[in-house]
Amino acid sequence: MTRGAARLEPASEEAIEKGARLLREGGLVAFPTETVYGLGADAASAAAVAKIYAAKGRPSFNPLIAHVADLDAARREAELPAAALRLAEAFWPGPLTLVAPRAAGGSVCEAARAGLASVALRVPSAPVARALILAAGRPIAAPSANRSGHVSPVTARHVLEDLGERVDLVIDGGRADKGVESTIVSVLGERPRLLRPGALTREALEEILRAPLEAGEGGAGEGGAAAIVAPGMTASHYAPRARLRLEADELRLGEAGLDFGGCFGAREGRGPILDLSPAADLEEAAANLFLYLRELDARGAALVAVAPIPARGLGEAINDRLRRAAAPK
Ligand code: TXA
Ligand code: MG
Image 1 (cartoon, protein in one colour):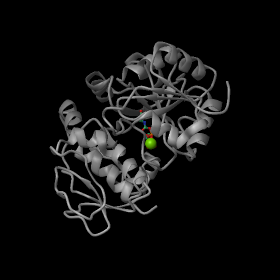
Image 2 (cartoon, helix red, strand yellow):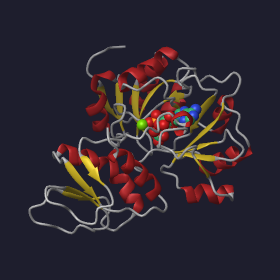
Image 3 (cartoon, rainbow, N blue to C red):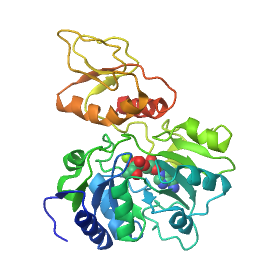
């Protein structure tokens, strides 16, 4: 494997073959999923997984999601209780991650699990991700392909901006269409718990479970117990350089705007305004969220007023990411 400048290749059969070979050799390959770009390594290899932690500057106590090809592969890695199987059947492939007890003989290494007895599993639906997992022929550990604590990448260019030559190959599959990460549900306890709101809505999950989802211990992201249950859900995360002022109903002097549904209107003499969704569509807003946070940074915005986003549906994940992006660093 060569070191040096990361190679960016458009998604193609050859790029996927090359990516799979690099993964089998212990390299790092960034690839698009339907949620955000992932930074992949062979989930069974402690040495390969160590490169993920090093490239991201990620603390080694924060476990990774293993990406698998299908439910059968997931069942080789984890003991999936009935509720997990119902969710998997309804939503895999797709933006759902299940945290379950690891199976005896599972291949996901201890470093990828950060030493936990549980394992996080997801079957992505994006064709490039699926093809890469199949070609590699093994589970792929992949966090979002950003520097630890930064905004998640939704384009190949974002990956290069954050990780550059720390990656052996970036497969460019265009924009990740959902734009926020997978929803993480723990099935470790008696009832399923929502550890991280994400691209799959609570409403959709609860419809299948026919019961309300329990909250992640301590409230995801408020530190405390959540810091143990989902170690990555620290208060400050997804952070742009700009300071965000949430639930703003107007722009103050000197502020740039992250709008929703045209609430700020156009104002002379104010900073740039990017509207997550002029039509107030939450799917569109989720897809634009990380892109626009990076764009506002690129335009040098220091203070950003963020319009209120409804809490329903994808709004839960959007508001979660915005709160973390606004938290003191
Ligand atoms: O959409 C996504 O989920 C993307 C794409 C690439 O698949 N991945 C992603 O990974 O967002 P990452 O590493 O940025 O976030 C994974 C989260 C972290 O907060 C981590 O703490 C949590 O999953 N996690 C992983 N394994 C866990 C486990 N065994 N128990 C509790 N939380 C776990
Ligand atoms: Mg991440």
